[in-house]
Amino acid sequence: MTTQPPGGIEVRAGAIIAFRLFDIAYAIDLTRAETLWARQSRGVSRSRLSATRPKAVAFGVPPVVISLDPVSIVLNGQAIQADLTARLYDFGVISFAVRIGVTDLPWAEFAAMMNAADTLLGSAAWAVRWLDLLTRVRTVLAEALERPGASTLEEDYLVGVVNEFADKPSAVQLQQKIDLVPLLSGESRLLSDGARADILRQRFSYYTDDLVVLTWDRAFIYEPRGDSDVMDVIEVANAQLLELRYYDELLDAELPRMYDMVETARRTRILFAARRFANLARRFYTLVAEVTELTEKVDNALQVTEDVYLARIYSSALELFRVRRVSAAVERKLAIIRDTYTALYDEASSRRAELMEFLIVVLIVVEVVLSLVRH
Image (cartoon, rainbow, N blue to C red):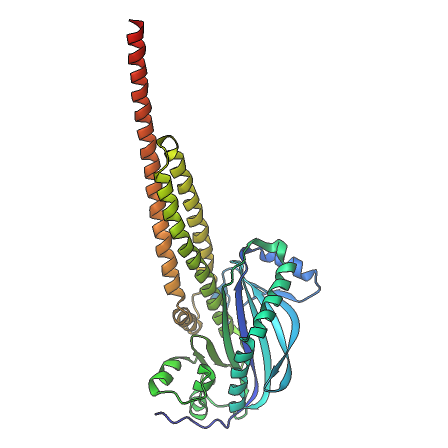
């Protein structure tokens, strides 16, 4: 069993940031959303990565950040005012961020505070508060929401950020002085060597004095320069996961209905079968077009080209969050619907041909009968 390093190092400045993401609409008109929120005399801005060159990494469509009233929370018996913002993505996702500032706190207490925040913000009481916040924002932005939905899907993520330690350690020294596993796992008991190695596998450093460690539902960021690019990338990856999960579930529900509708169409009388098949084909074509358009928006939410370090973090986050796996599942289901759409059009054409043949035979019979009657 690995011995844990001592936790005596002190966090001079940092924050605990909790994200909660919801799917709220088919799409959001961000320009309209900016206007609507500005009428409330509140802060609104477009997102950009703070430390990265625009040509290296950029948002496909920069999301809109809106300021909300601070929230009061109680952690370990202490009342705290936490900042609250929301970020709107054009593909229909809203991401709330609760930021709890931290100053002059021993590392062990910082880790305990992060675990307490996770428990509190994931509680039933806060589930009601999240929905209340969501309702208030949706009410103001109603005119900017295209086809608002009632999806219950959500994602959450927790990030511990340190901007300054008391003795300014390097990334290597930091990993020797503190144990990141309790903070990243939320566990107070000692974990096995295998579990510890798995939790610490996704580690990244660019300079000697920064460190990023990613896990499935938490991350640790040591960033003395105060850049927020890594956190923005993590949030985008979570937003992509949420939206792809939504379409994966949508297609899961659509496929059985599709099979039933096709079977019903095949039992339709020959006179109406061609039209029924054509109507179904158009319906499935529309569904494929809409889902394809939105998944392309999701895939292009963040463009990473020249910044190798941020590209590695982004790629690892996509892999860790299973974004690519869900995206592949969506594409497989879309392929099934495309094949069905093609088959329906072929069958509609076949039924039309059958109908034409039937009518030709009827006309021939009528002509023969009339000919016999005349003679």
